Amino acid sequence: MPRLISLNARTAAHAQATDRIPVTLTEIRHPELPEPIRLSSDPTVRLSTDPLRYGTRHKGQAYEFVLMGLPWPDDQRGSAPKTTLVFENVVADMAKPLRSILSPPTADLTIVMADTPDVIEARYLKLKGTLGTWDASQISLDASRESFANEPMPSGRMSKARFPGLFR
Image 1 (cartoon, helix red, strand yellow):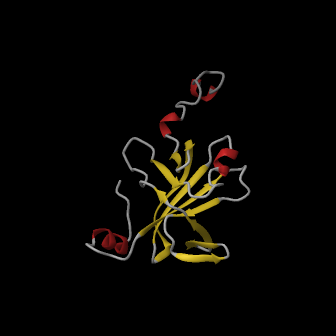
Image 2 (cartoon, one colour; image 1 turned 45 degrees about the vertical axis):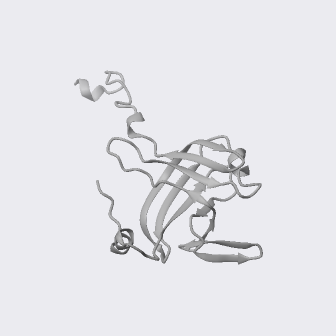
Image 3 (cartoon, one colour; image 1 turned 90 degrees about the vertical axis):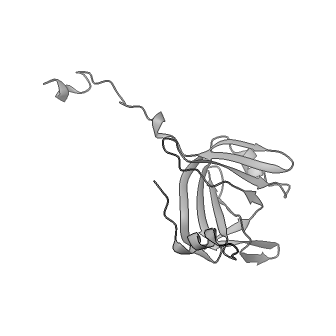
């Protein structure tokens, strides 16, 4: 099924040259983290001067700018959307939250345009982190939605003891 995006985003995508750029907002959540980690792929506005930080404001929340590479999740028939988030490791403590958690985090990806950050172009919710790796130069997090093929079907055997209404 094709994804619907706004006319402004389509015009910017097909233009030969444009100043409208897509911005990926990433929110990583986990019960062991004190608050969600909010990251932006674009330094849209100045968030603070001391320390100097840039990022994107989306619906009242500040998303901090980091150098990130991210292919948008695929929409293929028969498979769950999956992507790999790659963050450049430019700060000494950047991998610390990833090292501190043992179970998979949850990531929400929101795609907006830089000039209209409150208008959502695409959204991928509740992607589960499947693999996290880091080294001196980058941090990678593979994220995917859980496949519906993993759901047990049927969940139980249709026996007389469990479903007596079937055997009347």
